[in-house]
Image (cartoon, rainbow, N blue to C red; front, side, top):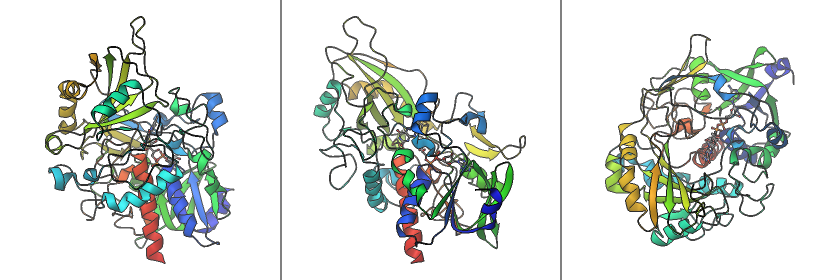
Amino acid sequence: MPSSDVGAEAHDVVIVGTGFASSFFLLGYLERASPDARIIVLERGRRNDHAWQIEHRANSDVVAADLFQRRGDPDKNWNFTIGFGGGSNCWWGNTPRMLPADFELQSRFGIGTDWPLSYDDLAPHYERVEREMEIAGPADSSPFPRRGPYPQPPHRLNEAERLLKRAYPGQFFATPTARARLPARSRGTCCANGVCNLCPVDAKFTIQNSLAHLYEDPRVTLLLGAEALAVETAAGRATGVVCRHQDRETTVLGDLVVLGANALFNPAILLRSGLHHPLLGRRLHEQVGLLAEVHLDGVDGFQGSSSVTGHGYMLYDDDTRRRTKAACLIETWNVGTFRPNYGRWLQALPLRLVFEDLPQDRNRVELSLDPPGRPVATFEERSEYAMRAVRDIGPDLERVLAPLPVERVVIEAAPEPTESHVQGTTVMGDHPDSSVIDRFCIHHGIRNLVVLGAGAFPTGSPANPTLTLCALSLWSVDHLLSSAA
Ligand SMILES: Cc1cc2nc3c(=O)[nH]c(=O)nc-3n(C[C@H](O)[C@H](O)[C@H](O)COP(=O)(O)OP(=O)(O)OC[C@H]3O[C@@H](n4cnc5c(N)ncnc54)[C@H](O)[C@@H]3O)c2cc1C
């Protein structure tokens, strides 16, 4: 559709982005919108389908690193995908929920900030997202309260994981994942080859393989190659989105504006819109990931039926620990390098140790002056809370791994440059002075502007964020449509 046509029309909703946050919002919106509703979705990237991605061995034709600048810690990176479906193209599909305590760090442990909503508020929406993604998850019990079994049975654990399960029945679980265990509606079954960012059999949930139908709904217009630049406002209301499409700038009009461009670009769009707030762009953070490998005596790893099959909570929800140092989620893997010992190649268990980080104001997204308006992600350092836990991991792990026949544990010296989770920057809260958006992801100042995604997270738990941010989108749209009814 030419830009001039788009600019002339009025829409009920303008949505920015086609990733998880926007697509789950659209899913909830379409279910209750009238037959004559008019929704336009602006997507900056192109639609590179699964076949294109496999052929080009890439998730996108856009190099994400070219779209923003980095400052501060030179080793700190941020990772995401531009294009139809956003990060669903490259994600690995791990989908733990946050624990109830993760929403209440301040009241329970005296650190960080409480979320303005509780686990129970989000629980029905978690369940809905898990159904849509056909999550394979533990059949026995789970570390967080949930009703009934997961849509799919759990992936098979490897031998070392089965020993951990026996030793820690209430703290070690099969990883909940969007990598199919059984053939799913529109996906193959996981083949456990560990290249999940480019899944060769299309076994993980993606927007392209499971929610593309939303964009074919006659009420929806999808505009590819349309970069949202700013939200236009008048008299305290959003009136539309200024975007660049086909080398022209145009304003797409709408009664409701929804930003789902991720936690790097949402704050950039808001800053360009002149919607300043002391916390806008601040508290950029993600988990701290540390790789380790456990060499075992006579016990094999690597026979699990997916890439990441185990989640250990032994260093996570402990009251004493969390008052002083970060919770750690222990991921146990079936991919990684084999052990360099003849005849004992498989006697190893690769780990990814995922620590929560406490958001800090000085880690931030701003706009550059040259070129003007480009996002700059400045990351000074991780919190002492996280790094204390990282420093203590040797003895902590020795204790946790005691039930296994461990020969040695090799822990990487430094954390990974990124966990590929961009969080913070448009934080939610009850008070306009101390948060950018409210508990329903609605901008405190502009009440018809919704800002979705993990930017809303006041604190980030060790859990991967995507299931939670999708549940937040459903919670937000549910509120908007209920209060409008
Ligand atoms: C390699 C990798 C592995 C991951 N694995 C996991 C995992 O196992 N579990 C998990 O929970 N999370 C994982 N993640 C993180 C996950 O991808 C993100 O949490 C998720 O994609 C965020 O969803 P979102 O919709 O907020 O943003 P995105 O998915 O980033 O979507 C943003 C959308 O907006 C578009 N866009 C951006 N700017 C503009 C603009 N100005 N105008 C118009 N459109 C715009 C983008 O093209 C994109 O479509 C992984 C990420 C990576 C990179």
